[in-house]
Image 1 (cartoon, protein in one colour):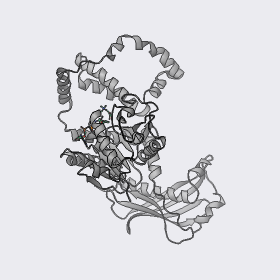
Image 2 (cartoon, helix red, strand yellow):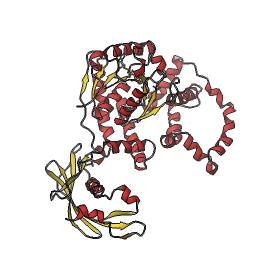
Image 3 (tube, rainbow, N blue to C red):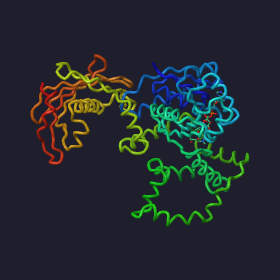
Image 4 (cartoon, rainbow, N blue to C red):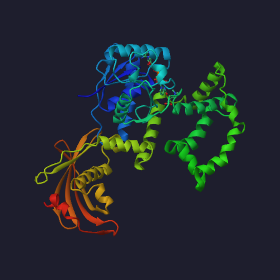
Length: 463
Ligand SMILES: NC(=O)C1=CN([C@@H]2O[C@H](COP(=O)(O)OP(=O)(O)OC[C@H]3O[C@@H](n4cnc5c(N)ncnc54)[C@H](O)[C@@H]3O)[C@@H](O)[C@H]2O)C=CC1
Ligand SMILES: C[N+](C)(C)CC(=O)CC(=O)[O-]
């Protein structure tokens, strides 16, 4: 049975949480008194459905069931996890927590608060041990970070439980060791925001020029290396010490005047909102969200290819979700069903069906599963031996459409002391989508030559 998440407050952030939980297979109950909340969440969910699966290389779980609860009590009843995302007002959050804990006193209760400390959230609570900060980043359904901030009143075991749930839905829970206003990331965001307000107020730059300054340069660097690793590289061969010696002194130069906060007047708001309208008003917010999502998917896929930063989290999440087929009986004459895949958005071409390179990908996933099955997985490769593909013949027997679930099965046609001759079927249910005949050579990787495999392979390879 699917687990249940309750989302209290279904605005920008609550909608993102709802989408992430739903697409991770959880049932979700949302409570938000705004009559527009179901429409808004529907639109966020549509964007999320087009985006999140494009990061996965393994089948997505079946989507959970979404309900809009009439009351907060109905929403939290039986919830395994509750995420509060109401407006950023402490009195409101306190009221909401009191209501939640009347109905579900022991449930894990994460707050999306951007700035309040957990000890502030826990004030006067019936059970402070389960209330903590789980601060996400917009769009919650794509960005993995959730800052997890406990206070000394939290039960550490429950916090670990919450972190595990967030990992399960593909997030990266960053445990903040000491509570502080605005946690870690928002302190940076606020510092940059403060500088930007000054620059616009003083007529130094427009909103568009500031965005260009970020997105054409350091913003690209930050997304993959952060601050310290970027500056370590900028220090040249002498690294961080040299970087600090060279640029440390500039901290006491006049730049620091910008630490003051500009007065937040109507005039400043109109100036910034007017420039922002001129810059981006020709797009709707939903269009901008879709542009943002497509760009983020591109970045994240590149990071995934290099197992770096947020891409590493995606790979680990795939590994956690990879469907491991039950070990088939080795002496059965039937094809071994070894791989389970799903046609994901990035697999679709301009004809609206699975693109040809993905047929080979599906075959390759199946072949890799077979090699793991006979003991030639990554440990074996690390020992310097592997199978290389010498020839593939693909027959495209049928179309596969977005979301189709495919299986890959293998029959060994022949095997000798260096070769493996395989017949791979990619099927949707009983329907053949493709068949691939492959010849693999066993290779001594250091020598770069075909070589005899060890005797343990003959368990499965003898036809
Ligand atoms: N917008 C952002 O970029 C981010 C916001 N956050 C945090 O997430 C929380 C929510 O922010 P947003 O989603 O941006 O605000 P929002 O204004 O889009 O949504 C807040 C929602 O809470 C609902 N609400 C108000 N009172 C309620 C109640 N008693 N019960 C249930 N729902 C209620 C409102 O109807 C509204 O739909 C805040 O704590 C904010 O600091 C965190 C990360 C990023
Ligand atoms: C502006 N903000 C403080 C609400 C931003 C956040 O909390 C995180 C984000 O997604 O930028």
